[in-house]
Amino acid sequence: MKTLIIYTHPSPTGFNAAILKEVQSNLSKKHEVKTLDLYAENFDPILRFDQEHRRRDLHKDPEMAKYRDLITWAEHLILIFPIWWSGMPAILKGFIDRVFAADFAYYYKKVGLQGHLQGKSGWIIASHNTPAFALPFVQDYGKVLKNQVLKLCGISPVKLTELNGVERKTDQQRQEMLKKIGQLASQI
Image (tube, rainbow, N blue to C red; front, side, top):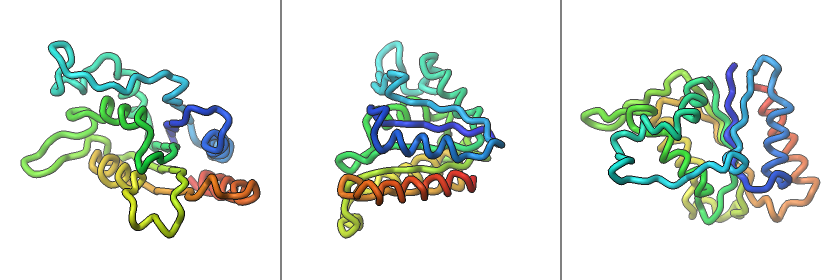
């Protein structure tokens, strides 16, 4: 299976980097894997609209062609990112804004959207520090990405794995989280 991992964290050595390594090392050898590290790539998340950059032409933006090609190539997307201030990192939001554009990832119907990315599946791995008791009271951007972006673009099924309270976990608890991620990755 052609698998694209979209990794979004500025630290190459933190817990999210450990998640990335766990996923990469536990995916079956049947996967052809490519990893896109948005920070290492120095991805420009700024969406511009002017005479040269029109919203209706986003799907043809030559700067985004290689990213559209990666999305097109992939049969399975894995997104690994932290949730900060109840949202995904700005660089990932910018990636979605610039790459998952109308007439590439979806088109408008009379009512609603029609996804162009059918036949693809996804797995979102989001880490955050929200205590479990507070989760019902905060916006969950893992679910937003799953239901209001990927599924609307035709990507289904999408699995969501949330690792909460990460900063308050012991090293042993974090290792258990990583082991769980490795087990899930091996089942894809």
